[in-house]
Every structure is written in C-alpha cells, then in structure tokens.
Length: 121
Image (tube, rainbow, N blue to C red):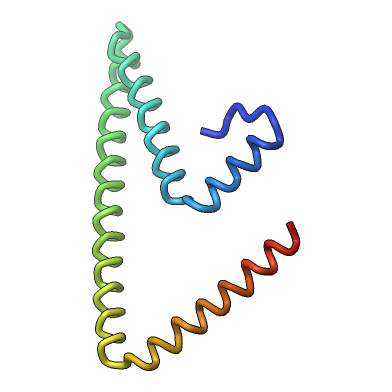
C-alpha cells in the first residue's frame, strides 16, 4: 500500500492514514498478502513436478488455516467490543454524574492536546 511513495508530502499523508486508521491499513495489507499468496499457490497448480504439486497442496492447506484463524480472530474481537460496550452502558446507567465528569475531563484533555498540536504546527 505504501510501497511507491515519491514525495515527502505523500509520505506524510501515508503516515497520517496509518496513524488514523491502523486497523483498516492492517486489514488492507493482510488482504494484499493473502491475495499474493493465493496467486503464488495458483501458479504452483500448473507445475508438472510432483514436489511442486505437494507444495501446492501444503500451501493451499496453510492458506485455508490462515483465513480461518483470521476470521475467528475478527469474531473474537467483535465479541469483546460488544461486551465492552455493554459494560460501558451499565456503568453510565449506574453512575451518570461520574460518567459526565469523565466525559468532561476527556474533552478538556482532547482540547488541550489539540491546542498544543496546532500551536506547534
């Protein structure tokens, strides 16, 4: 994704994208990797050599296992996010004033940080 950066401006833009959306970038890079490996495995399928055919079967099996593990990992992360959201909702319902104070402090911290960041640019 970031292989052919030609200017400093493009490099800064790529760094900003990576910072703002690391999960999306990681998913895209993983998708590109899986696609490349699948292309290589498909090319092995046309080989006549028995050793290359054996490698093709092993690579296909490994690719299938990797895709399954990635899918399971996404499901686990989704379930954990759902549980955290439920816990947050319960906390807010049980302690609304404390929650409001935490949000106010968070907004103050964000305001101070963005103010400093803008002052240094």
